[in-house]
Image 1: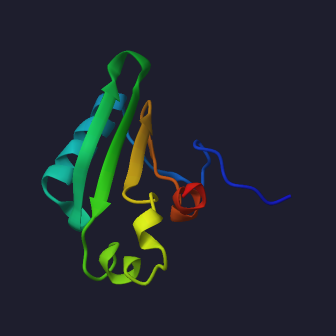
Image 2: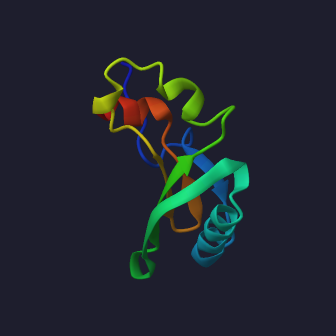
Length: 104
């Protein structure tokens, strides 16, 4: 049976850091430097549970939303953007776009 991957699927895992604190510092530093033309929309960090969510917007003219988003019919109803990076302890995940778009 085909289905959407789980939040903690290895397909969604981006990187593993030595600690939760290192994972948070890496995400905050990369977003502050606008790495890959990504910018932070907001962040939620729950230190006591070692969970964090970073909502990011990809602004690249070549690979961000700009080059394809205007091709969507009914785009005024799309809620699939921006993307989320989430930390579960020392692992960083991001769901594939098909997950976000399926929720739209």
